[in-house]
Image 1 (cartoon, rainbow, N blue to C red):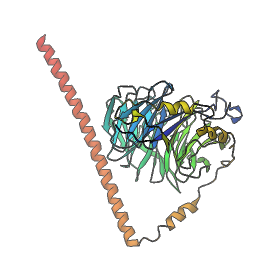
Image 2 (cartoon, helix red, strand yellow):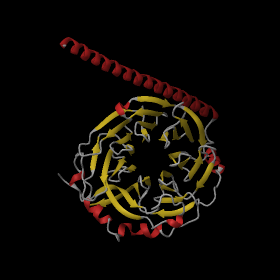
Image 3 (cartoon, rainbow, N blue to C red):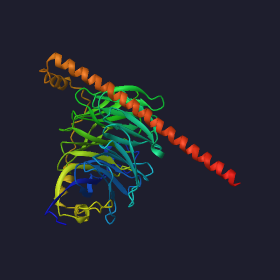
Image 4 (spheres, rainbow, N blue to C red):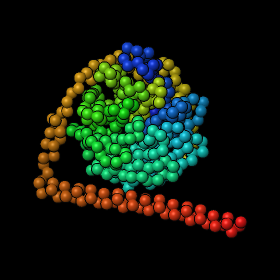
Length: 445
C-alpha cells in the first residue's frame, strides 16, 4: 500500500474550562482559571460537523462530512473507534442520557443508533425524505426528535424506532430541533427565518420567533427551560424568553456566521462557535463577552459543554498536515486515534496552541453590553439586491414554490401513513406469531 508524504486530517479540539467549581455561584468573579487546551484529536478526513460528550465524561462523539462517526476516549492510552455506516455526510451526533447509545443524522436521509464500543453495532432507519440535519434525545432517553430538509420535524421512540408524529408548519429546511429539559416542549429553527416552539402533547405550534436578517443555524434550551438561545447567520446570538416571548439578550460579538452554541449546565454561561474561527464565552448574568478563544485555523462548526460543565469540546474545518497513519487508510471500523498528535497537544507549551491561553485571558471585551435591537437595514439591502427580477417571472417562481410546498407536504403525509401502516403490520405479525405459539403449546399439552 502506497502512502503519500502527508495526509490531511480535520481537527477536533477538547478544552478544559474551569469556569465554575460551585454550580450555584452566579458571578464571573468566582472563576478559578482561564480556559486551557486539554486534548487535541485529529482523525476525520473532512469537516467536523457535530460533537457531544458522554454523561460519564469518558467518551466524545463526533460527526463529519467524511460520512463517519468517531468515538474518542478521553484517556490517551485508549483507542478511538471509527464507525462507517452512513453513505453520506453525518450532520449531527448525540449521546443518549445514559451514554449507552449514540444517535447520528445524515445526508443519506437516515438516522443510526450506535453502541459506542468496539463492536460498532448499529440500527439504521430512514427518518426523512431529505437530509436529516439534527437528532436529539429526550431527557428520559425514550424518544428522539429529528429535523430535516424535507421541512418536517419528527418524533420517534428509541426502542424499535417507531414513528410517533410529525410537525409540519415550517416552509423551508429545518436546521435544528431540540427537546426542552422537561420534555414537554420542542424548539425548532428553519431557513424560513422562524424559530418555532411546539407543545409535544398537543403537537401544536404555540409561538413563532422571527429572525429578520438571517436564519438560526442552531437553537437550544437554557437548562432552566425558561428561555432559548439561537445561533444566527446574521453573525449574532439571541436569547429569548419563551414565557413572555421577548428577546432578553442580543450579542453581536462575531464577525462571521454563528454555527453552534451550548449552555453551561449551571445556566450562567453560553459558548458560541463561528465561521470567524473563534469561540466566545458569554456571561449571561452580566450580559457581556467574557472570553474569545482562537484555537481553530478555520471555521468552528460545533461546540458543546460536558454534562458537568468542566470541559467543552469544539470541532472545525481546519486542515492540518500530519504524518500518515496506517490506521486511517483502511476501512477498519475501530480506527485508532492519532497518538502522536494527542500527546503533542497535551504539552503545556506546544507552539501550535500557545496562543489559545494567551488570547483568552486578554479579551474581556464589553462588546455585548446592552441589548441592541434588530437591524432592518440588512433586510432592506438584501431585498434591494433582488430588485432586478421581472414581476411576471417572480409570480411564476412563487407559484412553482407554492406547488413544491404542497407536493412536499403530500409526500410527508404519505410517508407518515406508510410508516403507521408498517408499524401496524409489525404488530399484526407479532400477534399472529404469539397466537401460533400459544396454539402450538396447547396442542403439545
